[in-house]
Amino acid sequence: MIETREGPTTTARKRVLVINDDPAILDVFRELLEEEGYEALLDTMRTGNLDAQYDRVVEERPDVVVLDFVILGEQAGWQFLQLIKMQPKTARVPVVVCTAAVDLVRELGAHLSKLRVEVVLKPFEIDHLYAAIARAIKETDGDPWG
Image (cartoon, rainbow, N blue to C red; front, side):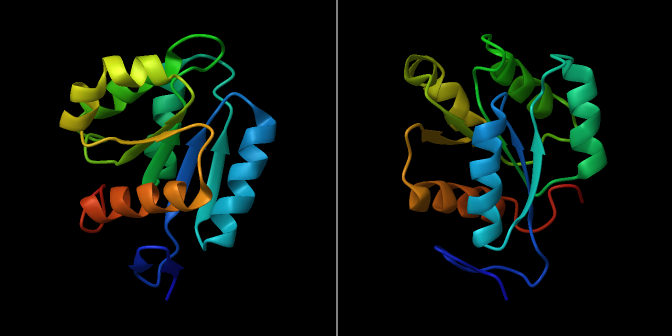
């Protein structure tokens, strides 16, 4: 059994796709997630092609996506979140927004809540990140792809 800060999960390793344009941050996420027993999938989204990024999500079938709002100096993360949540195939995939864009999070707070998106503001405490991921996964009650 994999132990998380919120308690045990299923025996299968949960897959977490982290999308951030900073490779150093992705390395930190890899270490943090693997220490906690998750399988870390990493993507820089450097192409800026949201359709290609969406295809990667569908191909990888993560249990949760951790996404920054500001990617490549733009709000590409916000646009990508909307794409994930608007498509029937991925609407149930939980998303944790991990961002320093505090003003944007405040602006979109009601909408994020309606979409059941967890938010972790940078700089963050590691336990807060783990708890947000665990809650997001638990919210789907199993396979978000089923």
